[in-house]
Length: 166
Image (tube, rainbow, N blue to C red; front, side, top):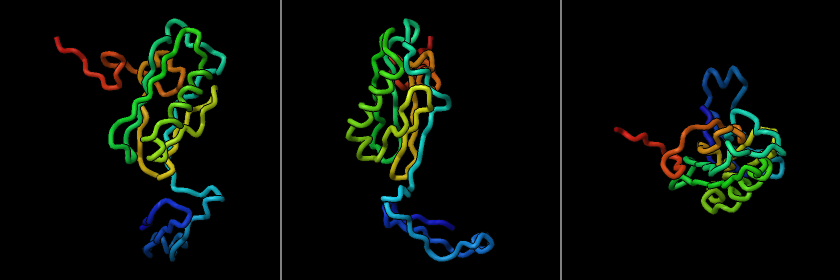
């Protein structure tokens, strides 16, 4: 059994001896490498597809508001980041705006969530330095320029969707 005692440069992973751990040669306690070596207990959420090329504009069909919603980790409530894109906004500009929004959000900073890969033409990657599970959902990106897929947003482009019942 592996047990983590925290996520810091002095974190330890305790290994309880079992047949599997013995067969794998895992015994004792292993300490995490120093933070300067880059070792951590992080988790990642990556877009299922690459973003569109950086110079590509959203165009008339893709213009509007895009909402990026982050939930989970130790966030007390969902965090919605809104990106207003016009027909001439390029994917690179939208990604730069998203990077700024993530970096400037106190709740995300407190949860250790960052946008660690934000290059047009590649998958967007969000990382939690605390190793906690979190989710990223995107609404309003009808052309899937950000690579997270797209679905119909609720009223006012809300991330929660409730179909009307008539």
